[in-house]
Structure formats: C-alpha cells, structure tokens
Amino acid sequence: MLLGIDTANERASVALDDGREINSEHSWRSGNNHTVELASYVNRMMITADVNAQSLRGIAVAIGPGSFTGLRIGLGFAKGLSIAYSIPLVGVSTLDILAHMQPKVECVLLTLISAGRKSIVSGRYIWHSGGWKTDGAPYITTWQEVVEETKSGSFYICGELGTVDRAEFGENVMLAPPPLNVRRASYMIAIARKRFDTGDLDEPNALSPFYLRTT
Image (cartoon, rainbow, N blue to C red; front, side):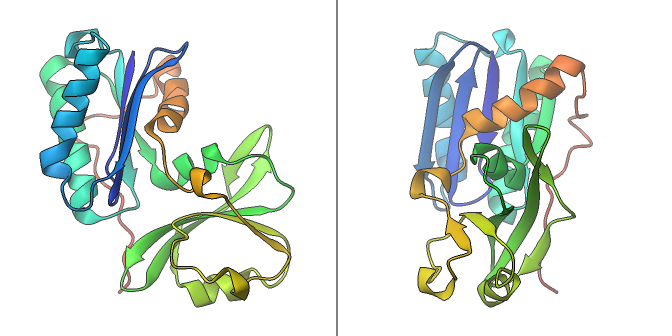
C-alpha cells in the first residue's frame, strides 16, 4: 500500500493505492489550510481503509514546483511519517504529475502551475516510448509569453488554466478539459511506484522542495 500526498498549491490531494486498485482518494481546494486539513484527511482515509502507518510500503510526495507554504507542509508531513516509521519515501515533480495524467497527442505538451505575481512555471514534454518525457528544464513564464510560444507548431496545454483567455490561442492549441487540469495523488503514486519497485528512493532528511521564482 502506497500513500500519496500533494499539497503543492491551494488544491490538495491524498490517496492510498495497493497496486491493484485505488483504495481511497481525496482531492479538495484547501486554500491556505493545509496545516489544519492534511493530517485529518490522511487519518480519516487510513482509518476507512483499515490501514496503519506500519503497513505502508512507501510514501510519495509532491516536491514542486508550487507554493512555498504548501510544499513545506506536505513534505514535512511525509518526511515525519517516513522517519518515524522507517517508510521509504519518493519525491515527485508536480509538473510530471500533470503530464502523466494527459492522453497521447501528436504535439508538444505544456504543463503550467501558478508561480504568483502573474507568473507561471511551465514544463515542456514530448511523447516518447509510450509516455510523456521532459523536454528541457522547467522555466518561469507569463500567459503572454505562453501565447507567443504557441503561435507556431501544435501544442496541448494543461494545468492551472483558470485565468487564461482561451480566445487568445489559435486553432493549433488544445486546452485540457477541467478534470485533467487538477492533479490527483493517485497519478503521483503511479509514477512513484516504478521507483519503489526498483529501489530508487529518496533520503528523507535530504529531500527538499523544488522552487522556481521570478527574480
């Protein structure tokens, strides 16, 4: 049984997955209440599933990019469980979670997460060998720059699209539907499970959030 924790921004998600099925999953708009709500949601989910910390095979946690406070709370909670109960831990990129959720399309994939101050963190992906693979490092951008970037070629965009004016994009750009723009902890577990299976684990004391901020 793997536990997934994602509090990278105002939307949070937790899940339990035993490798055969998603035992439980909760995704909600937490705002700035991660500290109050996270432990309660995880505890309720584990009680309902009749699971205790000692029976967890591993913990997957979102490490960013995202908000400073949200990432710190989720990672701190996951590291605390990992160290206290000697549970293996794996950190997963929030941009990779979004990419993993998307269908195969014959174009470039852009995953977007708000960086505050009207800025966006963007991750660029291409489809290769049956899945989305990163195409360069994440970068800070703006909606205006995204529009300019996508004027040539074909693009599929997902992530935090709440403020985007869809009319600004040409017919060469597809925007993901709402269900595929909200990160789900079960998809993060699917990414992390491969690393648990191969023993590619993170050291809890060394694992830290990944931030990208404008200068």
